Structure formats: C-alpha cells, structure tokens
Length: 343
Ligand code: NAD
Ligand code: UDP
Ligand code: UDP
Image (tube, rainbow, N blue to C red; front, side, top):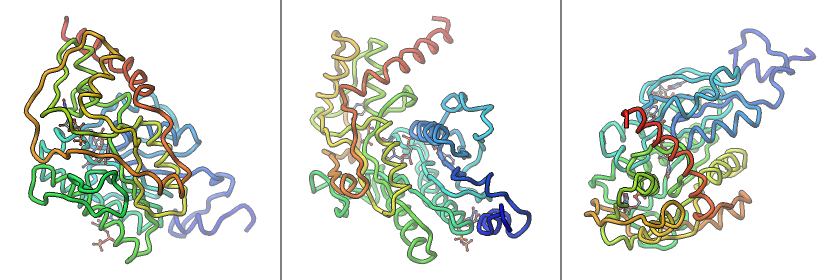
C-alpha cells in the first residue's frame, strides 16, 4: 500500500495499525538510559538537535532534572523515572545505555546496587533491544583495563583488574556488561556497539561528585585547597564532553561493533592538572595532599588509533581549551548554592 511501511508497522505495532511513511522519515526514536546524568544529558541535546525523538530513562541517583529541564515541553523529548534494574517495555530504534554512576565516590556508595545496575540493568536493556530489534550501545569504561600493565592502552589489552577490590563493583561490573553485550550479539543477533570511555569532564558534572576535575574546579572557585591524592604523580587523560558525545554518535551510526577507546590521549599527572586548573581559574590556588584510595590506577592513556581509522573520530578540544568551558557553569551553580544557604 503506497504511503505505508510494513517493516515499521510490524516492528512498532505488532501488526496492529499502520504508520504513514511520512511520519517515520529518517527521524529515529532513541532511548538514552542515564540521560539525566552528565554525559547522557549532553548526548540527548545532540540527538534532539539532530531531529530525533528521545526518551530518557533515569532513576536520578546521580542525575538531575536540571540537566534536561530545558527540553521539557519539547514534544520530541520524554523523561521516565525508572530504574534499569527493573524490566521496561518500549519501542525504539536505538538504545544508548549509560545508566550507572561513574564517579568512584558514587559507585562505591552502594556497591551491590552498582553491580546490579551493570549486570541486571544491562541485561534488561539487551533483552529490550532483542525484542524490538533495536541497536544497542554500551558505555563501558577505561576501568576495564584496571591498573594497566600496558601503556597506552589498546582495545586488545585484556586488563589488570582486582576482582575483589573496592572498585570491582564498577570495573568488573562493566566487564560483565561487555560480556553480556557480546553474548546477546553472538547468541541473539542483537546489533551492538561498545565504547570504552576514558575520563571525561565538562559542564553539568555534579559539583562534589569526587572526580578529580570537578573536585579541583569546585575547590579552586571556592578558594579551598585542591586535594591531590597520593603523590599526585598518577596520570589520567582528560576528554571534553562534546568530543565524547561526537564519538558515541559516530560509533552508534557506524558499522563497527568495537570495543573502541574514546578518550583524549593528552596525559597529565594530577599535579599537572592542578597547575592547569590554577592557571585557568585562580593563580593563587593552593594544593593539599591527601591519602590515596585503594586500587587507584597509576596511569591511563588511550590508544585511539582504532577509532581514528574506523570511525574517523578524534578529540578536538585540549584540556587547556576545555577547562574554561566548564568554569562558568560551575561558578553559577556554586553561587546559587551559596545563595540558597543564605551566605
Ligand atoms: P553520571 O553519574 O553523571 O550519570 C549516570 C546516570 O545514570 C545518572 O543520571 C544516574 O541517575 C543514572 N543511573 C544510575 N543508576 C541507574 C539505574 N539503576 N537506573 C536508571 N538510571 C540510573 O555519570 P556520567 O559521567 O554521565 O557517565 C555516564 C556513563 O558513562 C556511565 O555508564 C559511566 O560508567 C560511563 N563512563 C563515564 C566516564 C566519565 O569520565 N564521565 C568514564 C568512563 C565511563
Ligand atoms: N526485558 C525488558 N524489556 C523487554 C524485553 C526484555 O526489560 O522489552 C528484560 C526481561 O525482563 C529480562 C531481560 O530483559 O529480564 C532479558 O530478556 P531476554 O528476553 O533476553 O531473556 P529472558 O526473559 O528469556 O530471561
Ligand atoms: N584524585 C585526586 N584528587 C581528588 C580526586 C581524585 O588527586 O580530589 C585522583 C585520584 O586518586 C585518581 C585521579 O585523580 O588518581 C582520577 O580520579 P577520578 O575519581 O576522577 O577518576 P578515576 O579515573 O579514578 O575513575
């Protein structure tokens, strides 16, 4: 029948009702789990700007309505308060699965919940993808490499992870989530994508989420000393959030499963990071040394040749360019917080 699409009808309506092709167009319906969080909310902005319909699923553990409030009223945006540990029925074309606390402070807060989110939450989203024939993207992490013995890390490296440590709810949880993803691909033919994300920063991070960039930036703005854990010689590679979001979309739209490292190869010690924050925010900022946490990886830097070659993706924004882009957002929120306290 002219004007109707059989596939669309059967996929979305189980044979009941008909949907004109004009409505379908190229516009996709996309679920973003964890879409009220830091990375998720920036991803949602990009998908909405592209013209897609977006459904956010979030339990607001670390996410905030403020991150997506500018989209309320947009008919292409929907927000569902839901915990991915519980099953859900939806009809969509793509699933970006981000739901999981990412800051060590948050994921260690309730480790059993963290691993349930990673295992049962990922299982449910894969079950959903299987039922409706949606493409599924997992946001895994550089933490799957643990305290790496290979440097920089390539996707072929199997990692050096403590299975019984305090970080294992997160790193082993994500490793299991990767396993589930590949098993649903091999066993049930689900179209899957795996991104291994390296440390990412930008506006909308929780002010006090314990991650190093948000901590240093908040501390420098509040004129508190920046807390350097251990000797500060451990390294990380910091990626600005818009680069990550571009990489996630490029991966989802590509023909490649991955896993792909998505990160900025620029590597900094924590002392060097403190210096950049000082230059950016307050030349009089000071540092204070604190005891380090258990199992802290000594160094981390992505080898991104695979993403460059196959996805034609690489980060564009250096740490010195990216940090100033989050400072206004942090200043405004810290100011509001202080006013809220009557200071
Ligand atoms: P975030 O904590 O800001 O966002 C996570 C979101 O998931 C929040 O909105 C939270 O409320 C939601 N959530 C948590 N548990 C949930 C559950 N059980 N059900 C529904 N929603 C739930 O973290 P982020 O930095 O935006 O990270 C997003 C994803 O990217 C995570 O999966 C994280 O593991 C991954 N990642 C992030 C980084 C980084 O540096 N930001 C690095 C590696 C991997
Ligand atoms: N699931 C879901 N939404 C769906 C389909 C499945 O939440 O639309 C959940 C389902 O409840 C189950 C998980 O995904 O817990 C795995 O589903 P699958 O069908 O693969 O496995 P089974 O239900 O056979 O164990
Ligand atoms: N760190 C620090 N000061 C802080 C918070 C973190 O020196 O206030 C260090 C931490 O020990 C680690 C690095 O910064 O070596 C990155 O920590 P983060 O929690 O941001 O992310 P991770 O890469 O460990 O998941």
